[in-house]
Length: 256
Image 1 (cartoon, rainbow, N blue to C red):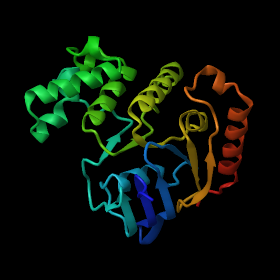
Image 2 (image 1 turned 90 degrees about the horizontal axis):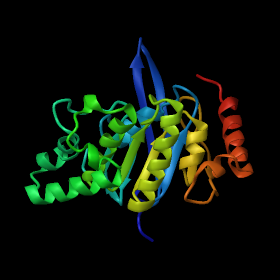
Image 3 (image 1 turned 135 degrees about the vertical axis):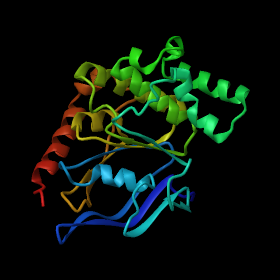
């Protein structure tokens, strides 16, 4: 049997605050299979974003192991791509320039860089805006640029930290639909953190519900909804049942 795309075993993280220890993460095990789309929810402040930053290699863990396709993670690397809520685009670079930035840093030849950039501009619906600057784009389009930039790296695992959290409701739903379309075409392995239960159910093959701090896996729910997903899925009994079950689990958690 092949190794999971992403695997966490015995992961612990704590911070020292005002002379006391604040335990944030205590995950016995979490794994994501190749091409699986897993969403993560939990009570506010339970450590969801900290988990992604640890998995990305930006924050060291205190104990445990993180593996990508069986290889241990010891810091940031091109095998993991991170999409944040903040767009973090270079304002002086065009859309094409932002998408191709990582390839330039890597030293990819110009022809290869152009081919990859063009592919992801088409995939994310940004082709006609390729020469625009970020200031000329809407919030949703800026997030598309940020996603295209990460995809251009071709990471094995995509880590997404509430990327649609700052968008208005209508744009958010549109971006959710576009992301599911991109996922179906690329089959990237995705771990997606959100505070929005509807979003978690709509996007995920599986929803991981974390406990209150320190975050442990409270429950994992398989989402048996047809793909591609549209407005009809959001109105289905199965969607509502999953949403209500997750909501009940989160409400049962008492913040520490």
